[in-house]
Image 1 (spheres, rainbow, N blue to C red):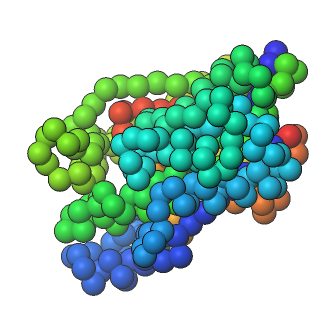
Image 2 (cartoon, rainbow, N blue to C red; image 1 turned 30 degrees about the horizontal axis):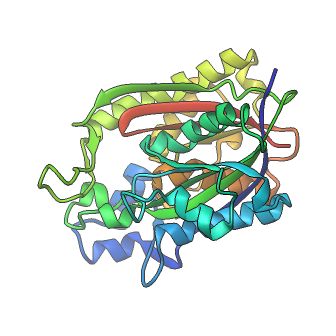
Length: 316
């Protein structure tokens, strides 16, 4: 068996905290309405000179420093995102320059929306098998506040900005991620219009459709990963679910019959950060000691596409 292990993590959040009370000043909403339907109390938004590239760079540097790995040892750099500063060059290419990664490092962005980080882990696992250097940076970074219509209370209260990074290493005796990925093409449920549509590039979402999809996809994907790994869900040390909506997470925990204490999240403070959601939570768990060496985290992302992805990641 061969696969990857998590060596270290990093994260970066904008300085500006936007509370539900702040949003209530610009759109017809209130704290009770938002919290009761989503579990979100606040989120972070970029302001001033803060950029997508800056958040990703800070998170990646932190992961490298914590892992004690030099940029020259990186063979793959993937940024999962839907809100990068440029259509091209890729955010990963900007990281190659700023971090000083070797020029033969495989660098690209990956768009699988909220599933993007988990997709990126599996892609890194596959690429590292043939790479001359066996370390990869997988970053989930978003500045979703740029894609919000702040007159639409159904979407603007949900999303936040941030970046999370994972430094992983491939080894011949390391466990497989046992990744499970999937897609059910649906542009109407959740989309951001492109330049050819002539429409504003704001997030558009059919909340009921997405909710019905999520409460099906999340528990199903988690169970599939555990089955593929050949372990009962009880042996998973932590569940790192995409922080989209607390009601979705609560439903999945109940359906899977797992210990809620293993499923703690950060949605109340970060909101939905799309591809950054899973790595941000992963970093919190690692740095707090809630996820320790040798323990396994079952990560699941789900979102626009419609996509889903799960992986069983072990901390080195």
